[in-house]
Image: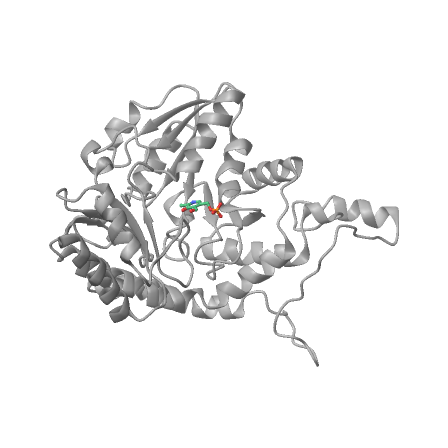
Length: 402
Ligand SMILES: Cc1ncc(COP(=O)(O)O)c(C=O)c1O
């Protein structure tokens, strides 16, 4: 299969799962095809015995109070667990909570946590500003580490390793089976932010212990809500995660869960289109004289491209672009201000094209120093006509050359 076909292949396969998910198990006369939203705090019971029976089912998607979840949240949890290939899922209030919650669930004071150098900036900030305060040691490793090098980062008390593949902004694709194998030899757990790979990377088939999703991105898909999900694949991890979520008081609004389910219906077809457009624009940008490099996992020169080919069934719609070093960061800002179809915005995965200048925002312990200082920006490709998007990029690049 050509790389061009490979970027969208996996998204098409999701159509049947997504259009049949969370529908009534038995169609009765007058059944609505969409699940209802139940809003509420109070849940009532006919007897004390019935309330305590329900309370004992807290690991089984049951609730005795609105803060423990709602029926629509549980429907969404089942769908996400199925797509990720895990057994249980906890929906949380944001993608960032989905990153921080499992770290709180699986680490104790005195433990050491290893973090891949290319994770989402706020995940790293949480480790620095909160986990360290609670007595967790943190260190970072380069994303393209070999098994041998990785060994040297482990300490006797390393309990978790947190990765994100492809990495935020720099898009390195990691050798997840190798990372899992070394991690498990040390008796630790591997937590993965799989937001870019939702539906096209199967974390549990590759041995990942905890998979994290910012549902805000592809699943919600309309840039109108914030939500996250954490999926696990065994009972022990599920109990630990669910207990931590309940003790912290994690709540997901029923409207957000319902809207995310609605967004999921079209995720396969949206992403099939957006991933093709993103790959075509990435390939085209590489040929423009103003561009020094494009970081997109499906391009052969992206670090870890071979792992993308081996492990992924498609590609996402967000990637980074480096201007030639003859252009300053100030000139990049002029270029970005000259774009008319790309709004300047921090998120991705929605229906609309976005641009985000990232020079100075990318924090790395193991940087390509030169690349980090370069004029670098991130593009998210939406559902607009691809020729219109190219035309917009070209007219803004033309201002650079003046
Ligand atoms: C890879 C990744 N993980 C997590 C998040 C956090 O998601 P949210 O914005 O829902 O908190 C983001 C947001 O940009 C992200 O890019």
